[in-house]
Image (cartoon, rainbow, N blue to C red; front, side, top):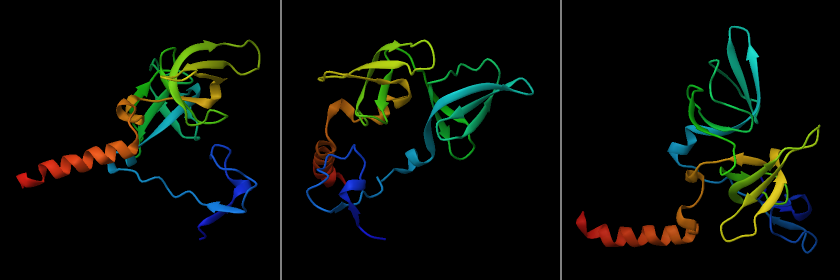
Length: 178
């Protein structure tokens, strides 16, 4: 497998100039810890009744889950599903004030809280206004945002390099105890 990719074919979210050189380095697969590998986040895109009185939830990736009638899940909500048994581990409601991330569009990768949800009558997409700490915020279509938990973001806005430096300092300080 090659380590290069043509610049013209990279996603728009990559901050590189397209027509300066021919190739760029390919993205490598982001490392994941064992706790996070045991579950996956899914956005509910459809909810329907199935025979037997249960409700079937369809997630953004095509996975389907059967839950009991009256379960508190709605379209747009996010759920964390265990990879072992397919059970729902956590539920995040899609509502004003929810922490979301944009997964597509011009603001892909940005995180903020939902300020308003503008419901558009007819077949057009609903719009969502998202407020950001220290930023102007943005507006995007509802399909582009996914509700997340605080665990999916860096703590206190620190960069990964800062967290690595602090962890190294903690190891150096506690190294004499062993």
